[in-house]
Image (cartoon, rainbow, N blue to C red; front, top):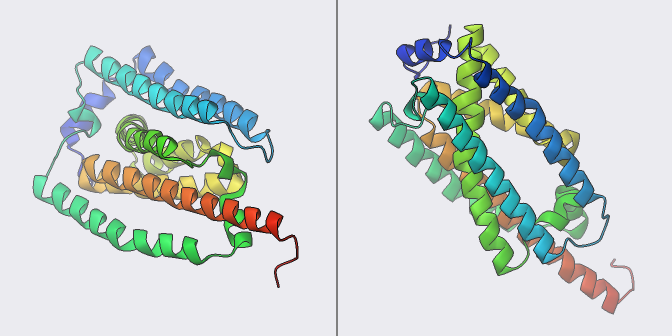
Length: 264
């Protein structure tokens, strides 16, 4: 087994969950049921084609995402408590405090440097490039202040809950079941990618890659905190960039309607 930052005593405690039916039912729900229902719902929205998603429908979608993730997290914590484990055993702890805080600070610095670069590229990108980048998901990006406020709640929820679910729960139980760090990390990343299947094949592969990085980060540091901060920050950056891209596309389309002559 690869040396990790996860306390071996915690892994022994997780092995006690392997014979428990509720642990595996929850794992199946997380790995199969939730991605399937999410895919169906998002495909229904994307089937609207080029019609903008109404404000109320979008806010309902954001609210549903937040509610489902917190309910899943609460169910996870209840199962852990039922079997004598805690949130700390799922990675919700500092672990090596110096290492955890240093890594978290370093990730925040990287985000602080990368974010202006990404947003500048969006501001300078041509309409065709923006359309290719956001695709049909442009209609789900936040547009107004209220939508952005709701989207911030989605980002914070995803940062906290998805890391607990896909790293804190899934990586630990797969590690306990297989005894292999890499098998747990790779399998967990694949499940995380499948959960983003509504984004299409490219989006799903990107999510697998991101999930792999977040899982490696967790097993090396032994704490979910750095991954939660990074996850929330990246999601927020993507949302702001998507909102900016949509705003620029709407402006370009308005100009095109006002002056239908082709742009040289």
